[in-house]
Image (cartoon, rainbow, N blue to C red; front, side, top):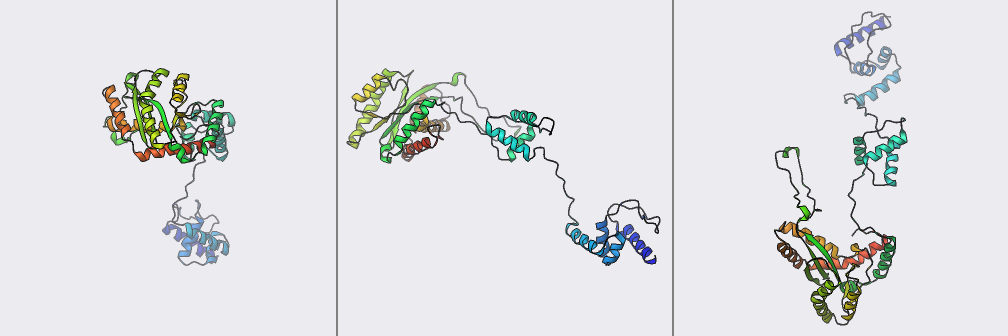
Length: 379
């Protein structure tokens, strides 16, 4: 009993002056089995007693554990003592099961809104699970690599035309690079002084509130506009013509006679027997009988172009490039005549390497059309 009392007295002094854990009340009855009214951190007691060179047997007697158990507790506690308390993470609102359900729901139809996803979760789980908010769903989608992309505007393809596109790509894919160098790519486009489709993106910060907002000014009716017809080859740009009013078969024949035929005959004389191949789309004014007779009369070979295939025509990318460069270099014109001069200047200064690259991209476009089975391509 003397040894037991001595050990309890030492423990009393240790707890009182070493300030172990939370404050402890003084031990009132040293001889009773219940020595304190508040729980004692056993790990801390073991660690402190070992610091004052108490034996494992004495420590085990005080805390009521075996010698080996006290030694293991001391070894484990020595590794984590002094570290910040463990952070208990809140339970996830969207667990793995709910996450798989969201992924399958989006995969079935990727045109889904956050409201649609939350409504689907409400129908699926009803009262069995807590349904996350729209903000939580949006954060989960972002953390799990879901990106919201803007759908590309493409021509709505008819199934019959899909088959025609695929057949055309099969016939053209094996053509050598020299074949595409002989093609004259042509088309029309409309250039507007104030494009309603032009979007302006700019950076903003909370400290920029004193600055005026960036305005994307719009004009009713889109301002003035001009329709252009143009063509190009791997050798360079051809004529670019500003057209007044709508284009019909008669006006198109006059355009070809005044601008295409002189350029075509000059190129044909340089190339000898291998003449150029004229590419035009299937617009009504292009496929009129009078137009086809005019081309045949002048011995102009044409491509049997498939319908609804602007993505296979590299001049569409040329038009887009010309419009972007015009806006960047000149901004908004004051008149229609100024708009025409701006477009003509950009057209005349297109780089030769750029034209070669676009002309040679025809084979890659045919390959992409074959891979998509005649459907839309990335171009």
